[in-house]
Image (cartoon, rainbow, N blue to C red; front, side, top):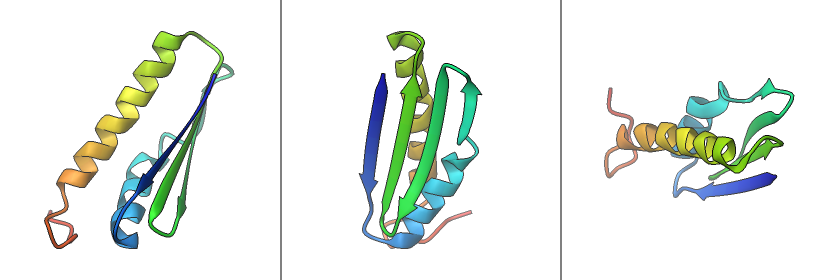
Length: 83
């Protein structure tokens, strides 16, 4: 099973922050699960390949989306990073 998720942002800075936050997940978790993240200007592209079962695929997507959501929450309305 393969999944491609494309996220679009208004600013490159926010896309970069999101991509960097989840880039540590760019790995072959096992021979059955691969996650790759790319950034193209204001878009973040996730490629997930899972040869296990649909439950593992859903759990991986859920974990990635949670990381993305946490990163997005650090940005205020002006797209400035708040630390």
